[in-house]
Image (tube, rainbow, N blue to C red; front, side, top):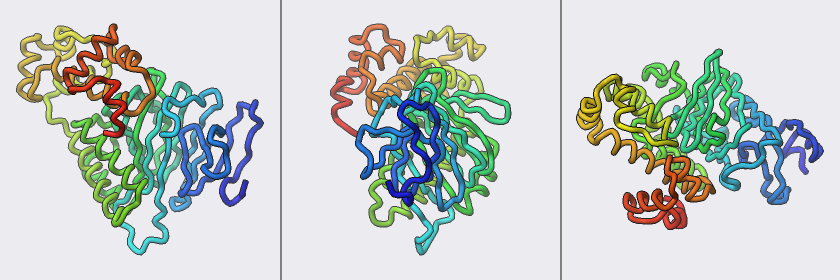
Length: 344
């Protein structure tokens, strides 16, 4: 294997040690796995510790133990890069890497002294965040931000798996924007519109992967749209009790939640809970909860290999047939047919 491609040591297959690699941006880096497209067999898997971005001169430390080398979604955990060093024009806000990842229990990434900003949109499961002796857990619809020069660790959360989309940003206007928008000290933002946030991350990944004409300008525009969306989401448009209820529902999509329980979390009566949701959200609280579950079901069908029955269980449905019926009533198609339709 050429030393210009990969530098480091390959452990003995039986060794649980972690390996260090320096990876060229043109290659794919996978969360916990690194199959070289030309020089490794398709099934060969090597754990990563360091992902090095030459144009940022920084190293991201990813501690991926061999005991956690069973991703939920193999062949989808790819990071796409663009090296701006030789471009005649570098936008002041630019995306230089995008990716889609599926982690299992034990996967983690130590993000140390970085010179760029990373944003991870959780689409399924949970992502645990640890920084400055404080811990937090992000769920579907949450965006985890790693700031320039700050250390933090992200890992698979208590759910035991995490599917997420990622963008890495750099440029002279990144920090001024984050400061002026109030995001410079924010590390987890709950998207105001999960579907819209996911569409931004998916579009950035597609543009980075395909690299069609004027893709650099399109990526820069998407970077700005993403940061504006985070800033808008960070300024809640709902009263605090409604915001608290929405956060509670997003963290409890795995079970049934009653109107009485939601009202208790909001410290209001069930009738007032419904009135607040209809006034500020436009639907009843239980209708909102059903929509959130439906959105997560779509994401799990698209982005994981979990069976329809397993997805139903994760969303609090004891009977797979009932889950399938509810899904078909809401979307007009069965979960299996929705999955087989391909990318949405």
